[in-house]
Image 1 (spheres, rainbow, N blue to C red):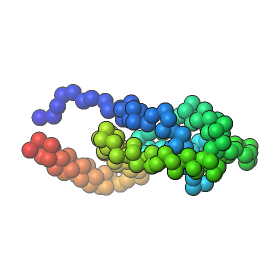
Image 2 (cartoon, helix red, strand yellow):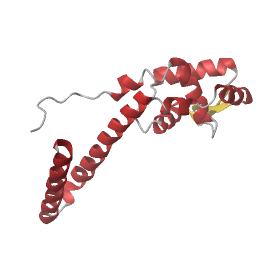
Image 3 (cartoon, rainbow, N blue to C red):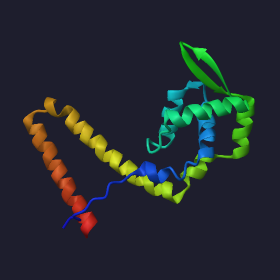
Image 4 (cartoon, rainbow, N blue to C red):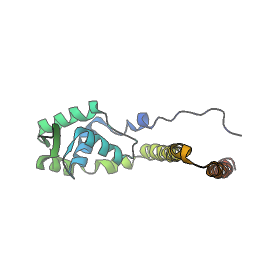
Length: 163
């Protein structure tokens, strides 16, 4: 009844084609337009824009920040021992001229497919974390109740998939 092979889904590999090398500098400027941030905050905020589907690595973000600083699009200052970056007026101008990079990426059909599949997987992972993260604190009758809900959901989903 169930397919015997399950393919591993790798959303990052597929999305990587949509986030072109030139796009990352505009994504960085996009997150900096609201407030100054240090590098890891930038990575986190870009990741949030993609609901975790794409999170740029330090090896991508820091060279991009250096390039943006060389271009005069960002400036950096030291705060609490960290380098904090803020967008300059030249950076805002470049961002406005480029248009909405996020909108263009988000409208991509491949991105939409990847995002929907990834978001679905995240929903399942969130459910698993909820259950297993609280499992030891649950009374046996609550565990049985959760099992029944999961069995009912599995049967409903099975009908949807195979009918």
